[in-house]
Length: 195
Image (tube, rainbow, N blue to C red; front, side, top):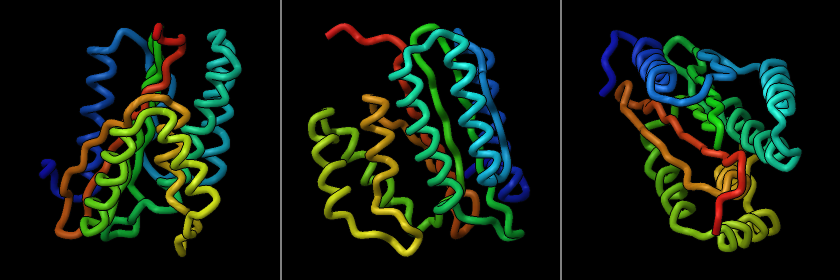
């Protein structure tokens, strides 16, 4: 369990730890970091700003488009599915790290403790698939997916996996009796890997 007095303190401690690790250990720079709620306006502003920074860094349009998809899916997951703490705060964060070879996008938000196993199971299943299998799952979910009461058919993680072409890493940590702070890392390569 994370240290701190309140759920916000515990989540902020995780955010600060990741931010500090990226600042100290990474051979890149943090393009964006935000801890707090994500309004639709903030999501729009962040995605536009990150796109502009990527284009200024001479990233290929295909990489920029894939980043946009990852950001939109991750931030909408937070906005729509992220839980609130005992004070009604939707505690969440985003950190985007840019290195010479890749972008590392880290999202964090609260999840109900009784839902986390299902989420981790879906990510583990995705991580065992190759790109072709993920694409097949995406198409199948798109055509046969059952919409949840919040509007999703489970496409968020599938889309992030498909667009990044990498595994999704994650950490889940209990922050209260019924809440878990869930953070996920999606790596997007800036250059094509040699086969």
